[in-house]
Amino acid sequence: MSISIQNTDEEPRNSVLGEINVAFHTYYQKRKTQMLENIHAGNYQVIVRMDNRIIVKCGDKVTQHLINNEAYHTIKAVSHLPVLFFYLLSESPIETATLKIEEVLRSLESELESDQPEKQALLEICDRTKALLTEMKDEAASQFDCFNQYWQQIEVIEGQLLAKAARLEISQTLSVLNKISAEMELSASRLFLVTLGGHQPRYKQLAKLIFKRWFSENSIQNVDAEHHVHYCEKGQSLEDALDLVATVVTDRELARSLLGSDTALDQDVLGLVAQQEIDRAWR
View 1 (spheres, rainbow, N blue to C red):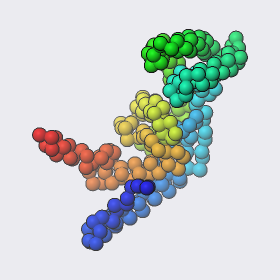
View 2: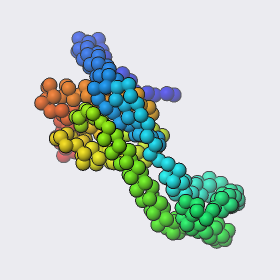
View 3: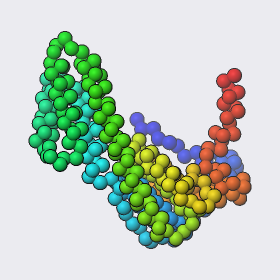
View 4: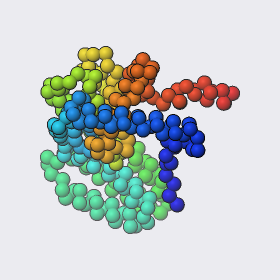
């Protein structure tokens, strides 16, 4: 049985109020379409972080910049090893899991070279994993306790790898952003930065944090970074990012005209107004 979100734009049905609701959404969508056309015409510049790239669009000009190189992906792959071993041990009989893990370790060791990136971390993980497998062959040993102790030993290595990955991503992202900034012709008020969550949303929050800090540090105008930096968790394409920016710009125009503030509609208005009612409901 498939259950999906219903369209409530016509509610309340069989009422003139439903027709009013439809009319509002029709006019809103029309204005949003016009804003999207303005974006495509080059009236706004949009910087989008997706997969390994930063995409920059201003009018017909679209450029791509690589952020995460082989060194970054090597670090991430090494950090994933203990998690892979956890799944193998959790979902397979110990004998089967041991054979698979030993095969992985042999493959890794055969590829290790003197200048192999993260060689030391790989060697430490391999050595500690071999010790883990030896302990688990003892029938009296608790598989959970053995792996928990193993993870505590590996955790320091994992932390170092993740910190290094973050440093790489920050430095590479800033390098690209500064290059874009040097070539940018539009003012900060016409710049929007979007991070697409894609298939790994939990990793992409770092990109949003970098975008926000960079925008705040480089904007010479009194422009709110929260309004110009956005995160689209399910976003998969440049078109998704542009659609989000069109929504933001449309809401900004509406908020400025009716509420006197560019950012008044950046949050859930109903949720903000209802805060007192929520507090009252739990009294």
